[in-house]
Length: 214
Image (cartoon, rainbow, N blue to C red; front, side, top):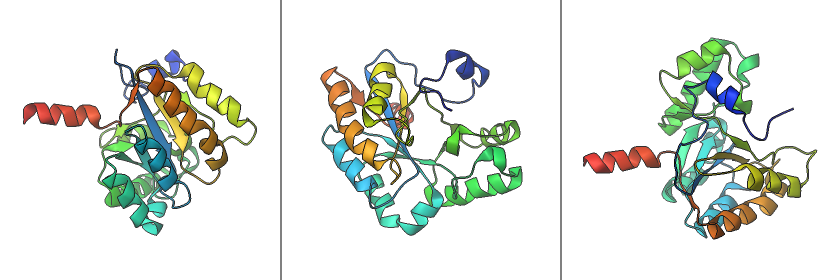
């Protein structure tokens, strides 16, 4: 059971988490969890490049270890990177110290200020600790590309009907999600590009502030 659109009351319960980026601009923040892997991530990069789209990739540390060349491809293409733990741990089922050490292990390979918990699941103590060190990124639109019980068409509808200015949308650059992603991602990019949207990664705001200071 999961919610495609994160309700406002949940967002307000956890105000220190980033659910969407408040803006009046036509901008979307596409995010990809669970990579990088050679079977899927390069294809995602090709689709994004066609629209000069920048995205944020929340990476699993063990995949970084196995596929450093794919991570380099993401970096060279100008996308942002985020921490998704080293072993894709479910925080609800993991001892706090083990969880923190797993996050740190991934951080050593990434040096990113962004963190997204796998499954969106953390214990309160885990969230309290991690928000001292990271920007905790959740989402307001979940595509459902990981769900074997919905069609690719439903997955596409999930995004088209719910994404709006500043939305953070979750996809997965994983083998499990690839069949749906191949159908959905090109259509999402085309649809919102035709509506005048651009696609930005989640570090863009911070980069613009640094440029303004310089």
